Image 1 (cartoon, rainbow, N blue to C red):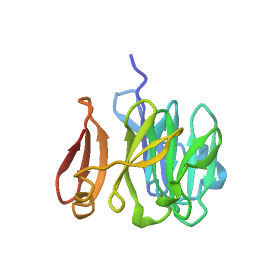
Image 2: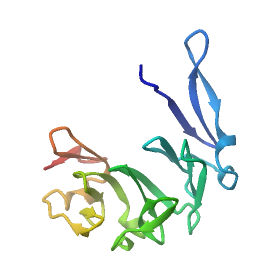
Image 3: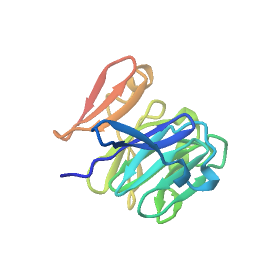
Image 4: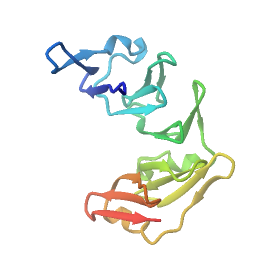
Length: 193
């Protein structure tokens, strides 16, 4: 059978639910395995899996947990890590004051033209695989983009883009049909091809 693990992040804690002898799940803290420089945190905002590793978005830090080994990165500004995303086997993160970055080895690099996302007004609400080479980036404030490491960042014209601010884009997901579902707080789900 598959080795399924349930990780939990909350206020000041991080851990895993593990089966006990009677079959119910029991919480086991893994805080001690978080790198020491990131261990004092208020919240776990996101848990993002990339391959066998799990990344914790702690706002002021990102921390890696898993077989690649523990590592922590500090944001340039307090609570600077807005959102983290897993796409095409890579970890992307929006960092305030810097922009959209991608993890290469153990270091983050700002993507070409990624500085457009350095301000909270250009918050990225969805970043999903578009195909094997490109990712779709969806924002409330500046529309839709495609990013390819070789071609860079390119705007993606769409009739949906102007609606994302008013409808308050919140999340997104690639669909098996090849379409992309963009979930909003006020306008339901918008599908784009």
